[in-house]
Length: 94
Image 1 (cartoon, one colour):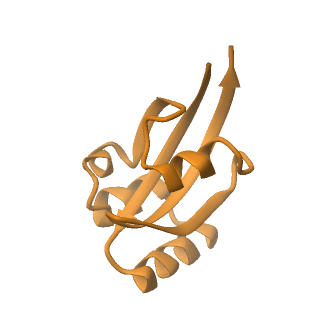
Image 2 (tube, helix red, strand yellow):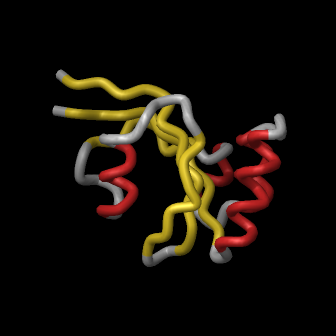
């Protein structure tokens, strides 16, 4: 079974997601940005989704989490909930 440690930021607006991504890439703290801007409940935890299993997330995010590079800030990725910035911290298979 595949699992991953993931954190993300969810916002309604693509432009805002792009601005936040730039701030993070320029050195802003991901957790602080998540707490301030994310509309997901995980924002209160600095965007931490914790350990997720394949199939637990919305399909577009699930696919990203289990195929994209680790330790890279991905997005904005659009889902039915808005625009996500996603970081795959660690992926494991067992």
